[in-house]
Length: 250
Image (cartoon, rainbow, N blue to C red):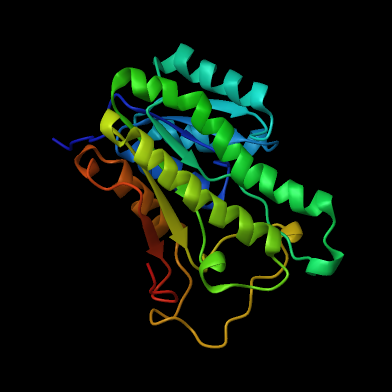
């Protein structure tokens, strides 16, 4: 009989309607976890992901909520508690990108990205961590990126937000490690996804990475799933780079 290592667990995946978020939601569902499918506005796409989740034998809940809205995030976490009993896993995937010359970047450009990437992760963690502490078990996985490790122009807001997420994640790892809760970052390189027009073009690369292609979303999801497994209780505060060797630092 096939084992389901995350059976009985519930994962909240932000930005789960498409691309990496969708792939992570389905991978965790395949491992047995119930999934709270979060989206900002694309309800139809989120409903489609929720349907796919049930095809893996897991339960699903769609929550349309802006992760920058603290009240909406708290309500989403409470809806998860009402339906599933608790939220055991948090995947902070929601983010915003764009390309703006720094001297042309408005404060609104800056705050929009920081609010979603960094403040959104803060709100989601504060909403779900009490349930993890209560159960003495939890997994937090935050989606980072290669950009802040190597530096790209015209993305000061995005790189700053992602860098902040690493510090934030390591702070959670240090504070909650003795309570059965781990916190890690999955840092993708170039990924074969559908980019919204607002994200701008992908940063150019002079040479391909040692693995000369873009990642599949399923490869990023596999790293996130690995970190959520019960047997990975001793992996915390880490950055897991999934970039084909494009960046080999720590």
